[in-house]
Length: 195
Ligand code: GLN
Image (cartoon, rainbow, N blue to C red; front, top):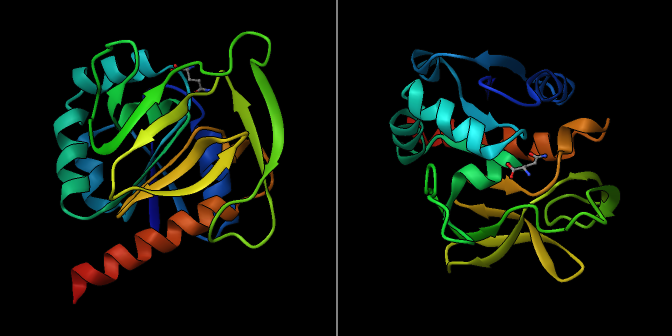
């Protein structure tokens, strides 16, 4: 399995490390043509406005929409989650608009800019170590979106078919089980394609 990490801005090397620990090949994706060679794509954390701008500039908006609509697996973490959302609070323009959810950016406020916690995540047996950095929250989801975990009553992990999103950074710890879960999604998506 080849899993790509969108390498325009943000935590790329860390995701590649987690992908390798989880047993797949990690590839930095800098050009849209590379999407043809990967079984799943991770959009990393960073700064969503910057990532969105660079995605527009290099043709990734259309390319990733086509990729996801073809049934390929896409995983957005932190800023990547913001980029996946159909709706952003505060009237900001969405970027890919692929996941039926409303997202609030920087939702934890200044007091709690960054913190770590153990999260119960559906599909992962024991709590997952999660690092939140100026993290967004999922305020509302559509009926096709499954909530995989909440933190203090707010949604922080969600899945919609072949799309996965986390408010936090799963790549900044040695706990790579969310990457494993995503690789499994990508593997299943690849099986469906070859049938
Ligand atoms: N606060 C950032 C944004 O709004 C996301 C932070 C992150 O990816 N760690 O884009």
